[in-house]
Length: 581
Image (tube, rainbow, N blue to C red; front, side, top):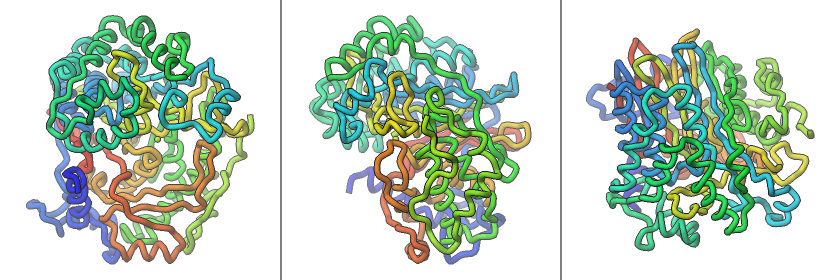
């Protein structure tokens, strides 16, 4: 067993001691948060595997300690929460290329205390205008592959950086990118978990010459504690500092992107890059037991989390035993119902208009919840609204002394992306286009200049008129499920923030897919080891297919406002760190 596997196994086995998951133990909202007294925490009660970070002035939580420290210094120098998030994201593109980078897309929710308004930014790129559906089906008759030039869409991250910085930034862009540039030139030590995922990507992506040159020095992935340098990425970052968005989407960098994609057999052209712009969007929201929860609208899947919450609001989860079969059965069935709509109704709104008002209505949730059988798991489900005929990641959040909060998520999609590294640039282009469907009747069907369905979603919540929580859970299809599990732990069972994120997770897989590919009936639900075997057997009696696996439960970061201070928490399953001042 690798060192990283041992690390994750130790954490998973510690969960029942540090937390509250045992199906045989009744657990109300009041005592759910105190069951940790069974663990080995010196303080006894209301504890997770570690304490949350408390700070008066500012806070940041990311999936990498060095990125967190870079963002924290920006906050201490008077930078805004967006400044801190941008600086941390730039560092993560270097230090955690297994999950993100400027070859990918970005989504953000920003609470602006000056306007007392939540702003949403969709920084996802579009498909090549020169590639038609007919040509793509000819080249990929079995579906769009995960690697190579065909799944590449325009990388939207850098334009999103520029938009967010122009609207909410305080410090110069040169200051924000300087730490990442220095680390790229001088080298940084690779962390344990990043080294693990880097090594997993090497066999798949090593056949691409430029990827191997940049990311496999000496013919292999860097190991834990080895120094890694990426001077090519430093030069790319300097071009962005010097020329802003034009330094990436026009001129030398753009030419390198286009040349490398076309040489590999792809279809991006200069006009695709030059025309790209992010889109400011009005966030969608619903209420869950008095808390207003916000997500961005499609082409992302945040709507699924809101639909799940509307369904679950009809169940008195507080009356159920936390971690019992009845509790988990309700959560899993809500996921299946919401994802049936996700599979057939979520797509780029510039091409397909989903019935958002109906999908978000409480009336629609009551109608759909009639499908719930408390005694039996559902199989394949159809969408409730009329079907329309016309995805590794990093998540981070930050808060500043003025009250600004940002929920920020960025990704290359599958692992380290497509494998295509534009010559001399030091970053991998994303493979997000793999999620397009090839069925002309499907709303997410490929079209030139279209944004693909997206899995990455930032979350936000408010109590009354006040911001309460910036949060996210990384991990493809797990993300809406993770959002709901975190929120239910906080709202239904009143867990402290770190405990709510550390609690053992489940992940339902299968069911309908946004690519239009064949679905797996009722799917299968996987559970972390914090759930006891007897609970899985009870779910199987209800018709659920269950299983165990070590990975695939995401990674969370969150910042909460409470008692006039920032409460920051980060993922123990990954290399995450929360910090404040």
